[in-house]
Length: 412
Image 1 (cartoon, rainbow, N blue to C red):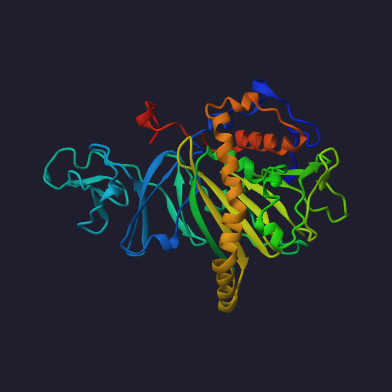
Image 2 (image 1 turned 45 degrees about the horizontal axis):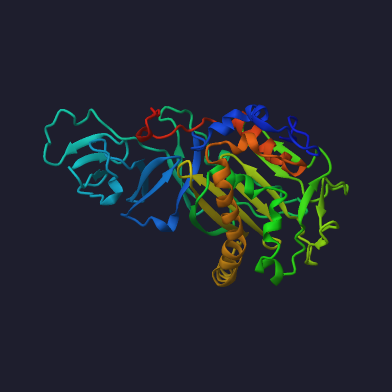
C-alpha cells in the first residue's frame, strides 16, 4: 500500500525546532540504531567454510561462523571476562567455539557454556551463555537479525528490504531480491551517525555535491542543482502492515504526465547552471527501514544502486554500496562483472559516493549530541526528510539502547 504521506506537506517548509523534533522523538532517540531488524553482516564470499568472521551492529559485537555449510552468529564477547572471541577463536570440536583466554567453550547453535578447558566440572557449565542471533544467507550477503532475544515471530528478511517493482513499470529497474540479479559491491566505514547517512542518501537537495563528479562529466549526465517538490504527491509512504516500510521520491512524472518534482537547473541570482545534456530516465530514490536506499536506473538505465547504512555505534556506520543488474546468463554476468571491476566500482563508489561520505562526516559535529535536530533550519526540499523521521517513529520495531559497558542495561 502506497499513499502520499498524510503527516507532512511536501510543498511547504516543515515545522522547526525542538517542538517539531518531538513529533518524531523515537527517531531522535535511535542514535544507536533500530533493533529487531535484519542487517547485512558480511558478503557471502567473506566467510569461507570453516572460517570465523566478526562485525559490530547497533553496538553489539557479533561473531560469525560457517561450519558444514551452516551459518552461526553469536555474541562476540566471552561471558567470563568480556574479551572478544574473534581475537583468536579456537574450534576444538564441531559445533563449538572456545575462548582463547581461559577456555570457556560455547555451543554455536545456542550460545550455552558447554565446558571450560581447564575446569570441566565447574558448576557454571550449563548455567551461563552468550547471545545468539538469527542468521540467513541470501542475495550474496549474510544477514543477521539484531534485537531482543525474545522477539517473536522473527519477520522474513524481505520485510526489511525494498519490495520488487512490477516489471510492467515503464522504467523498471532490477531489485536486490530479483531471481536473476547479480549483486556486486563493497562495504566500508563511515564516520558519522547512521541517521545522517540515511538522510543524505535520498535528500532531494544534496545532488549539488555531485555537480563536478567525474561520472557526471564522463556521461554528460543532466544532474540538476536539486529537486523542488511541487505537490503533496512528491513523496509516497509505504506502510502495508505485512510489507516493508519506506518512502519514495516520485521524481519521474506519473503515467498521465503529471509531475510532483521540478528539477532545478539554474539559479539566476548566482548565475549558476547545471551542466549535462543526457536526462536520467527513470531515476527514482526510495528509503526503507531499517536504512536501505534504492536508486533506480543509476548510474545507467537497467542498473540499480542499493546502499545500506548499518549502525556500528553512535558515531559511525558500515556503509554498504551495491550495484544490481538482471543477468540471467553466465555471459551477461561475466560482462557486468567485467564492467564493474574495471570501471563502475571506482566511478560510482569512489568518484561519486566519496562526496556523500565527507558530506555526512561534515554534519556529525552539529548532530553529535542530537542538538542539530532542534537547531536545524529546514526548507521545503527537506519535507521528505521529516516524513522519513516520522515514518521511522511509527514503524520501527524497537529503538536500540547503548551497550552495557556504557552503564546502561540492555535487554539480551
